Image (tube, rainbow, N blue to C red):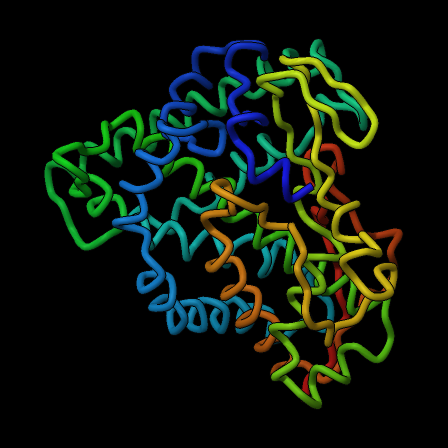
Length: 357
């Protein structure tokens, strides 16, 4: 699996020549380096990396704590609340919107976009090309609205640049080359929508997994230093995006299977994360597991750009949940609404019961 993800020359991420086309998605695609190969991928990622640095992410810690605290204050008088609606959705949206210089007050709009783009309502569990084309047409108006909103924001930042990430993207330059507005649209939209949904899924998956493994929450309360390892194990156990598609550029042999050039192959990260040759007792959830070389955030040139932010948000939010509540559990899984696993592994709604200290 790692070999496939580390070889973009043989296993391409660019499906623009084989998939159904849609004008609104072409605008988004210009800055979406997830679907690019070198050298375009390297050029765009290098420019974006000038603005979205590890220092920028690490500096968000205090703000994440403040936002998380305010969201938990909003449910301070409740013994039951929806963890997704109250925390897992708004926290990463607000943080990313503020980072980009976008009004956080519009976060309900971003949430609606994400619900449409990742809802998978038009797809079955094994979608074909006709299903994908129907889904693209169904969500095209949302993509068009999102593109227009982001482009307007970029133009405002160009007229009055500030200290936000969007303004820094406008100023980024490598060898005299700068990002075009359309490229920034794709990246900002990617970070705003896809960037937050990973944290949303991770937080929901963590609470569900801890609840289904009795003793985990009490162990984490007793030793909060275990949280980083526990987060990594949740990522291994329930990767939000369990499959990565690639297109072969030449004839290859995977295992004993001959695959012709131009074929689509799917790297199943969920299966790789349970590989007995890489993990001891792979079907056991071990919140103290070390080492934990899971592939949930990918591998190679397409390693998830937002992984450090998702990890930071999850660690802070889970720590604050443990500090606020001496009891946290899922009262009835019949009330839990799960996402379409063909799109994302996670929950849409997660009612929890809490007991305060």
